[in-house]
Length: 353
Image 1 (tube, rainbow, N blue to C red):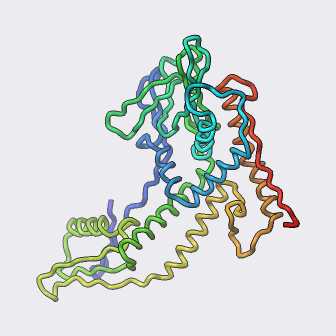
Image 2 (cartoon, rainbow, N blue to C red):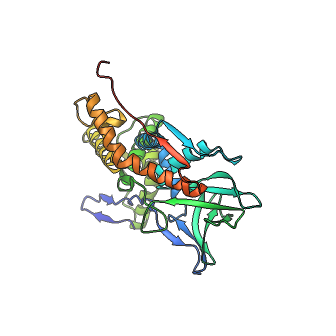
């Protein structure tokens, strides 16, 4: 609802609607306790929202990619390569990315008529939802959860008697879907993404400051004012509409709309402060020392010793726990003890160099 305050000068201030951030809300798709799948997000598309942020936000993408590379280490060793399914190195690589993004990953086990494991296929978390049928856990796979038809395939979870089943890794959480590592900085990630979009549209549309538009042909009714305000807001407000111009048609000069420039109030410094604050929040959420992304938050440079110490701390607290979960997951999926081993990074600088 639009709120307004009326002053003696007949200037009206309209309160813009707040941004509604997508949330990882969980909801059952059916009232039945025996058969249901759990929606992930209000529109059942929260993982795709996260992945879009990953592809379009530089800071977020860099931290995810760094963590992904550290988890993979210097070398992966597997006890067996299967004939069917996807190449095992590609499966592991994609599962690591999903673990970094969603704290969750999944693979599909393929079996021959004797129920022997003959292949492993990667399962995209963005296309997978979890649920239950007849008291058994199942996965629901769909190419597009936002489509009207919502066609999906039901695949059992960890069922050795099936021709194929799904094995899912989930970090501990209160709900059926886990919370991402960086969830505390989601607002900062979205803010940086919006700032980049705003600057991009400024470049394409031409730079423009904020303006005050005066309508000089009478005071409209409250309903008319709301309609005018909404049309102006839809057309010129928001990061996607930056830099657009106003075109006014008038009966005469006396009734012409006047546009006055509003002082910018040090917008450049505000954006710099906003950027640094969001950047700090994201780094803290990832528990990632700034040295590991090639910069520091202060003006002081860092040396090799500081970098090595920062990596050891990050490797111990963030990277190794993910590696341990990854190894356990593939041991469980294949039924082979020590199926996967990871040779970790060993960063050691040559002092003479």
